[in-house]
Length: 72
Image (cartoon, rainbow, N blue to C red):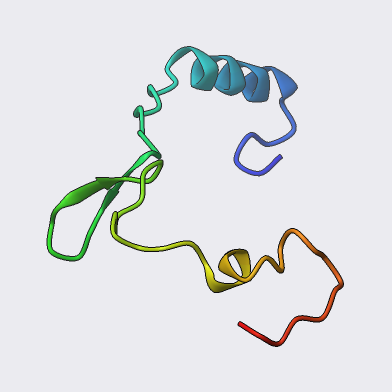
């Protein structure tokens, strides 16, 4: 116990004080992301609304796992 010497009472008092005087944790909304240009977007929605499905999903590969398909 560095800084308290060998006195466990001082250590305990410091621990109790730290708990009582604990700073509040700021509330962070992890569903909002700030872009490089300063605009904010919701991470639960698509940023590019015009995007089509991923290629693997369009070709049906995700529905037929482990089947080889080359005609996409």
